[in-house]
Image (cartoon, rainbow, N blue to C red; front, top):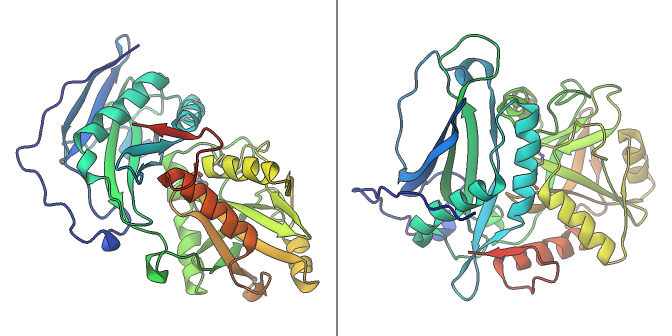
Amino acid sequence: MEYTFPVTRTTHPKPRPQDETKLGFAKYFTDHMFVMDYDEGQGWHDGRVVPHEPFLIEPACAVLHYSQCMFEGMKAYRNPQGGVQLFRPDMNIARMKRTNERMCIPELPGDIFLAAVKAVIQEDIDWVPSAPGTALYIRPFIFGDEVSFSVLPAKHYKFMIILSPTGSYYAANDGGLSTTRIYVQDEYIRAARGGTGFAKCGGNYGGGMRASLDAMKYNCKDVLWLDAAENKYVEEIGTSNAFFRIDDEVITAPLDSGTILPGITRNSVIQLLKRWGIKVSERKLSIDEIVEASKNGKLQEVFASGTAAVISPIGWLCVKGEDVPVGDTKVGPVAQKLYDNLYGMQTGTVEDYMGWIYKL
Ligand SMILES: *Cc1c(COP(=O)(O)O)cnc(C)c1O
């Protein structure tokens, strides 16, 4: 089905940021946003593109108290021909369905989701930046906006999409990859079996901030979470998935515990490694095994994967206050190759040999 949505153009277009090398992350927002309502009995209705501006919310609105909400994160990239393209939007749709199901949020049909993304980007297409490392970050989200204090699924929801031109994650390093230090969290947990770890829902992140803040005290950029049951097996890093290359095998946590966010970049990394004939395993990996591998010189690479940075190489793990070096602490060859191929396909400088690009 084809969807078209009415557009109310802003009467006050904002000046676009002049220097694309200083965009930062979610510092600027475009002129328009997408809004759609859901009412019990009526379903999703009245999708529209409107000016991006603050809106009123009733203080007793359920989401402000009980966090019945979800979000997605994706990017639109400017290709060398000047066109704009998305990366695997079907995967965002599939993940949204799983999150909504877990959070008792009514299903939003994938074709409405995609039509809405297209409609709002179309309006702000000139905001898609083109400098190396930049993209238009797309943040779709849904929240229950019923006025109610009962701890039950809302009867009314809003689906919105906002857009932010974002800069290179590696801007400080001339766009090239560099390694960071990560704190291995052995006190707090992120997600337990049966919980909401696999869902992109607000509560997961509010609950993780304490640990991220503590990690920064150790001069670490983010947190590597361990499993909640045994505090032993590695799970993921902040808002990205974690990969460990030990003795020429690339290992990442399996999804079956339901405690790991199934990253689209994670899935893409696994597919590329398989294609290149690099051994990749989705299996439990204990922090002890990693520390041991570092001691024996077998810990070759650690990197995180996610939409924001694509691939972030890690040079040191901070385990109980002690630095565990990864390889020679420099960017490893597998991380670099993955970054070059993924980022190249996303921005259209490398041929889309996986069929992952969706041109707008
Ligand atoms: C979004 C997210 C990821 C990465 O997912 P991508 O689809 O690759 O961006 C990983 N972990 C968490 C906790 C996340 O929120």
